[in-house]
Picture (cartoon, rainbow, N blue to C red):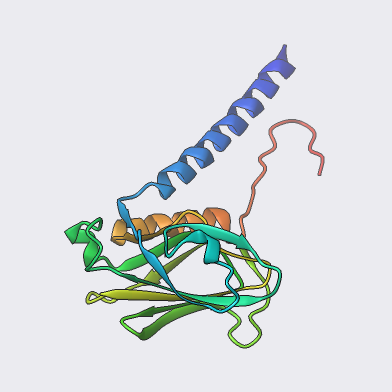
Length: 190
C-alpha cells in the first residue's frame, strides 16, 4: 500500500507542475493589446505575397527562393487602436517566421534580429518585442526568409504590463529551461 501512496504523490506533483506551466503560459499570452490590422505590402520583388491581398494582418508563405519583403502600417490612421495604446511603448510580434527582421519607426531604425549580412538561419515560433518611442506614427518591418515568411498570429501594440508578460513567455519558450527532478524514495536511479 505504501508504493501506491508514493506513486500518488509523484503523480500529484507532476500534474500540479504541468497545470502550473500550462496556466502560466496561457496567462502570459493574454494581455491588453491592439492588433495592427493594416500591414501594407510596400516591397515584394519576388511576388510571394501577391495572393494575400494588399492589406495583411497575419500571413505565412513557404518560399522557393530566399526573399525579402517590406511591410508598413500607420498607427494614427488605424481607428481600431484604442487611444491609450496608440502611445504604447511596445510592438509585440507573437510568432514570426523569418531569418532576419528589422523594425523602423517613423523611418528611424529601432531594432533587428538575425544576421544582417548573410540573412541565414530561421526563427521558428519565436516571439519578438520591440520598444517604441512615444511619438510613433508609422511602423515599417523588413523581413527576410529562406524557408518561409510570416507573422503567424499578427502584431500587437502592448503596454508595460504586456511587455512583462512577454518576458515570461519568452523564458518559457525560447530561453534555456532547467528541469529539476525531485526524487522521493529510498532508491534513486539516474
